[in-house]
Amino acid sequence: MVVFQKNKSGHPSLSRYHQDLIGKYMRLKHAPYFLLCNVGPELEADPSASEVAIGSSPTEFPTLAEAAAAPSPAKENRQQKIQEHNAYAAYLRHVERQQEPFNYLEQTTLTNFQDWLQSPLQPLSDNLESITYEVFEGDPVKYQQYERAITEALRDWAAQKKPTSSPGDDGAVVIAVAGSGRGPLVTRALRASENTGVPVRVWAVEKNPNAYVYLLRQNQKQWGGRVTVVKTDMRAWKGPLLQQASSSSGGQTENVYGKVDILVSELLGSFGDNELSPECLDGIQHVLAPGHGISIPQSYTAHATPIATPRLHADIAQREAAGDTTAFDTPWVVQLFAIDYVAQRGVPDRPRFQQAWEFAHPLPATTVAAVEARRAGGVAGGGGGSMAGAAGANDHNTRQCHLVFVCRARAIVHGIAGYFESVLYAPEGESEGENGEAREKVELSTLPDMIDRKSKDMISWFPIFFPLKVSLLFHLYLCCVSRTLSYAFLRWNGVVRENLLTGWLTFVPNTLATPLRPARF
Ligand SMILES: C[S@@+](CC[C@H](N)C(=O)[O-])C[C@H]1O[C@@H](n2cnc3c(N)ncnc32)[C@H](O)[C@@H]1O
Picture 1 (tube, rainbow, N blue to C red):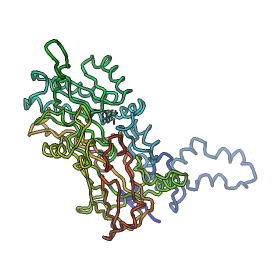
Picture 2 (picture 1 turned 180 degrees about the horizontal axis):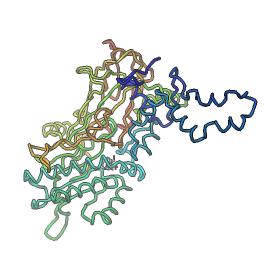
Picture 3 (picture 1 turned 60 degrees about the vertical axis):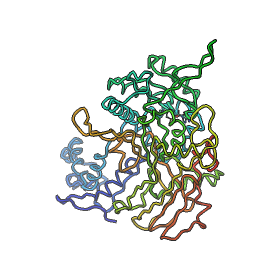
Picture 4 (picture 1 turned 30 degrees about the vertical axis):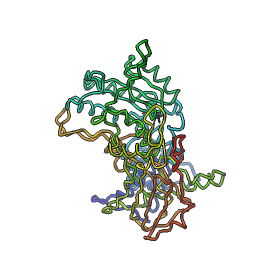
C-alpha cells in the first residue's frame, strides 16, 4: 500500500490521518517497530568505498598505498551520516520528534494502564483504601478545577452580598465537603477563602472510618482546627450542629442544626452518575440553604460512543472462558488505547460522542416535594435520600436515551465507550475576571475531543467500557441505555432486535449495587 505522498517541496510525507495513527502507535506501552517497504535502502552504496576496493581481490590484504588511500574512520562516519539520509526514514524520524513528550503523570500511569481492565470503584458501598486516595490526589488538575470553582462561587457570593448561613449571618460562607476522603477538597476550599478574602466555615463529612481518622489529623496538623469533621453517611447528616441538646432543671433542649451555603462533593464515576452521586446528593440536599444554597458540581452529563476494540474483546472473552461469568456484564473502567471509533466525525446532529443524560443539583423544590410525597419512610435522623423509602422514590433519577450514530464504514462494534462532563460552577451575572476577561464555566471533561479545552491533563478518570458479548457488524448503530433498568439493548437499520439481543447484551452496572439501593436497582 502506498501511503507516502509528496509535499510541496517534493519530499515524502504522510497524510494527517497517517501521522496521527503513527503518533498513536508511538505512545503504546510497547511501541512497535516500523518497517518501510519499497522506499530504497537506508544505507546507500558508498562509491568511495568501492573505489578503495578496486584492484584488490576480496581475499587479498590491501597494499600499504591502498590502505593509506582508504577513508579514515571519522571521514567514514561523516559519509555514513549523509548516506543514511533516506528521505522516507528521515521523515518518519521527524514525525517521531513531533510527538508531544509524556508529562510526568502520563509516564507513570497512562502507559501502564493502557487497555488494562479494572472493575469500577464503589466508594459508597466499600471503604476506599488510603492508597486509592493517594492515587486520586496525584492528579492536581481535578483539585485545581475545584479550587477555581469554589473561588468563583465565593467571589459571586461576596459580590452579590448573598446572606450566609453562619450563626448571626457574620459573613462567613458555610461550606460542607460531602465525601471528603482524606481532605484535599477541604484544603482547596480553605485556600479559595484565603485567596478571595471571603471568610468561610468548613465542615468535612465522610463515612469511611479510616479516612475520618486521617481528616481529624489533618485538621490538627494542617488546617489549624478550622474544620469540623463529621463521621457519617451524608444521607443521614442533619446539617452543621449549632447547639448541642442539653437537659437542665429548666427542661430539655434539642440539638439545633444550621444550613450549608456551598455543598462541595466529588462522587463522580467514569460515566458521571454511575457511582451514585445523584442518590447521595439527594440525601444531603436538605441541608442546603433554601433559595441561595449551591452545589459544586452543579451538573454532570454521561456520553457514549460505539468502539471497535478486538484486544479488549479478546481479553474479556478469555476471562469468561476462565470462569468469570460476569465478564461481559461488567462495565469496565479502562484507559482505552488500541481502539477505533466506529462513528463518523462531523455528521450533523449525529456527533461521534453523544450525550446520554444529565443530572443537576440541587433538585428543584417541586421535585423534592414530589419525592417526599412518594417516600414512605426515610433513614432515621437525616434527610434520608431518595434511595430510602418506597419503590418509586428514586423515579426522578431514572434516565433513558436513544442515540443514533452513523458509522464511517461497515464496522465491528465491540462495545460502548462511556465518558462524562461536569460543570462544577458557572459564574453568575455579567461580571468579569480579575483581568477584565469574561468568566468561563469551570468544568471537568473526559471526552477525548473536549478534555484538552476543559480540563487538560486530567487523569483522575479513565473511560468506562460496556462490552458486547457478540461483536456486531454495523452500518448504522442505535443504542438505548436505560439507567434504571440497568440493561442495554440495540437496534440497527431501524429493526428492533430486542428478543434476539436480550440475554447477551444485558449488563448490570455493579456500581449500582449498594446497601441502600432501591428495589428497582
Ligand atoms: C471519589 S472519593 C473523593 C474523595 C475526596 N473528596 C477527593 O476528591 O479526593 C468519594 C468519597 O466520598 C465518600 N462517600 C461516598 N458516599 C458517601 C456517603 N453516602 N456519605 C459519606 N461519604 C461518602 C467515600 O468514602 C469517598 O471518600
